[in-house]
Image 1 (tube, helix red, strand yellow):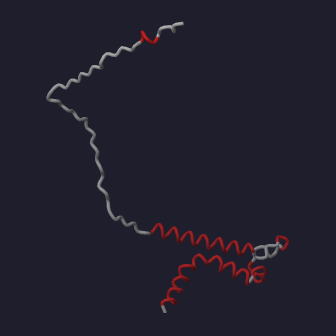
Image 2 (cartoon, helix red, strand yellow):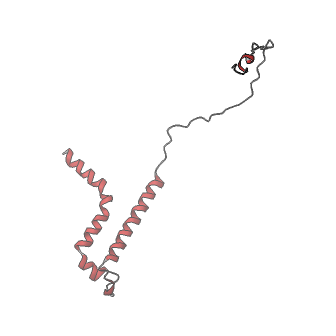
Image 3 (cartoon, helix red, strand yellow):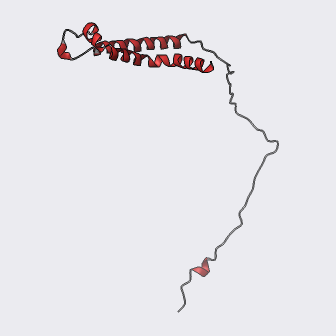
Length: 125
């Protein structure tokens, strides 16, 4: 019983996507009748339309109908807002720091003298 219900639900979901295929199958089964009675170009056999104009018109009608239904569904869909975040406010104010004592740093590098006198002498012979 559950599988039967599952197949019915699956068919109901798939029906809108299979609708153009049903129109094409109807056209294939009734091609002669459509070409003789319903075709717009039946008076001009040199075009070799054979009812393709009727098929194109029906497929276009179905597509427009489906687009219209989809746009109506989207337009009429209620918007559910789950939460509203509070806006964030940032205040950037300059900080002023006051030291109680005047801070002074003193650093002295030791004096360095390179042994230049020994390196710059010409070699002895």
